[in-house]
Image 1 (tube, rainbow over the protein chains, first blue to last red):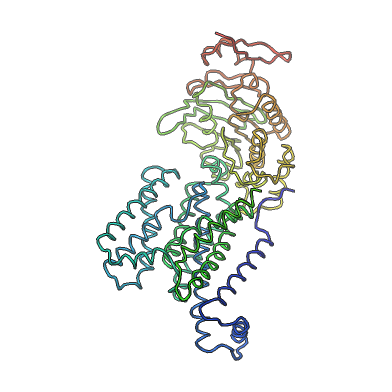
Image 2: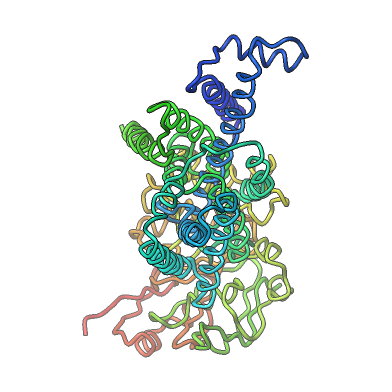
Length: 335
Length: 257
């Protein structure tokens, strides 16, 4: 009997184990050492209603600072990696990333303009980034549609929109150099301000988008055959593209709004998954979701602790650790 | 009984008709070869029959209008292999052949045991079982063509449209591929329409030949009727001699001008 590349129990076990290790590590490691046995005692106390070995302040560090940050890192990583895998599938291009259609440029421009107009309105930055990211993608989509229906046109439209929006951003920036640091800090990406509120804000968007992406993953394999063959198999390539790109862009916009622009996750995670587990998108999309979560949780540990009490921008960490790891996997695979 | 009937089909791209007013019927279980010089519209005719390009006129498959069928329903009736199929690098032969089951899958896209059995069967018939877990990029040209055929077979459609199935194959591999198609269609009662470049091969396997020139039907009939030196010279602007093999089928040999 033929054995296709499909999600198996051992995949889920491996991924779940890695996720547990990452979460536990992220919760235990930080500027203040809570001690693993006392954290365990706290969790036990929460479950049973007993007395906790942690002080009230330590308990707050655990539940109000570290936990939401870990969860947000996981969600953002999952969103970026899952969207990255989807973009690679739709564009049949291994270098496609979630920012390809103008999400990053749109978010960057709107954030810059907001910072320039009202420097104190930091509370609105996530919403502005979200709107900017979706706006950028919508602009690209509209432009691509008016010029033709193919993915190549859409890609070129993305390049045009991204350059234009970035040019606007740079122009506004040059006129207001005082805000440079604030904008730059946001663009580099980070999770330092995360709390449960932010988790709850992005969760609905991410949940919807990720469910759509995972359930459409099989269709990405069909799209890989090209539009004509996909159509001959009863699939409407244009409709599939619209749905998955909308979902992936929603996930990306939510991620960008929560954490700024974190590069590399959307490219490196799907590729590592592909090399380790197979190239079928039925495996790549769901495992990228988990892999992205694990990768970003681990990267955030490094971002928080490497230069503690100062924080490294997480985008620097993802590129700095991701690139060598990727090369390693690539080399191992070829020998 | 007719498996596929084209009536006054005109098709093309962006308002330019590449194929004009083609009418032909293909009986169940028979093999029709579409031949013609480069740019005659052979591939476009196949795509029109598969419902992949906008067309005027009528295409009936199993008595039903292709235009009226739903996408999935159409895909269950007509299998199509393009001239240069895309074989995604990293997919295994099994993953790839399973894509042929797409129009048979439920809403969530999960394959059942019977889908896997169909694919196993298709791989076995095309002698690909040993390569089932190999990535497509490691296959040779002949193996790739067989993998494409396995995908189309897994679709379990009654009508197969094969655009140049022997592209890039040497004479031996081309022969064994066409033998395979012939055996499969006779065993399953499948109807085959294929474009073919090699006129001698087109004379040996198909039951009938349709000569297309400049988008219009120049001749339809048995290979012996269509493949005459005079007609080929006229439509291909070629200088050929048509010999007769021991089994009576025409052999088209180019002659130096």
